[in-house]
Image (cartoon, rainbow, N blue to C red; front, side):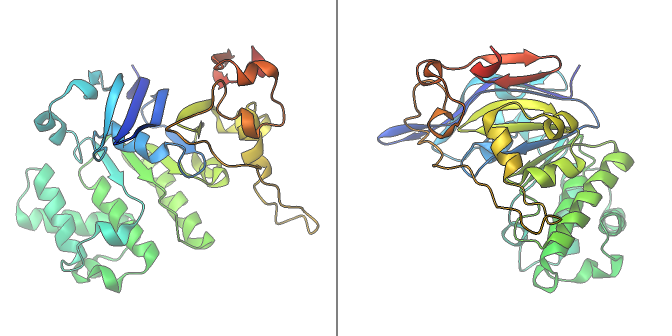
Length: 316
């Protein structure tokens, strides 16, 4: 049994004059101890998918269809009180901006202690020791326990949020754009930290990012999202060796190679579609170099190619 099994998930935002189909029929499986990268442009539905797993989609959004099985239980059917026992304790999330996630008036250590005591039956002194242990686990000295968020660098704030997320011993960690606004050296350190935590804590991780090269550093598998749909899902090696979907190919071509002095930067022409009025047929067709007539008339099905799948008529 998979740790997380999402089937035909649909999460829509109901606006006064339109319905935005942010996640529209996504199916995804994640095994224990696996790192899955979720990549795509801004607005592709990646963050909404992560929030849907925790049932934290802000109004006017809501899950309208599908199931999210976590350890055999369908989270969609659970009450808010039941979900409170799962959030943080079994599934944790690291949000995009650590500065806004941390209380500026509380010491970082006190915020860790508060999180630990909310989810684990320990005394205050035990929680303090655990907080220092988790700070050290993510590369922050225990003596920084008494510092405030403004005394931390961007990378340290992100590490402290990761420490807070793992301090409850979750089975699944959702990291939403954890390297945004960090320089490449700190990005690499955060990626190595995730790999270390996966090995030491047997943690499953969903890494949400717009940068496919970042995901390929540590992810076992990669799911490519476009316009609210998962258009390709395969191992990182297969995506690197032979991307199938034209959108995945475009993302791979857009990754710059610093070893080539005369390399031309590639980009995907056009803009993502309006998810309140997506195009008929394939949602990527207006930007696709390989589109056929059928692409503009019919929605492509999920085509299985060995142990991967792609949503494209090229493989029908």
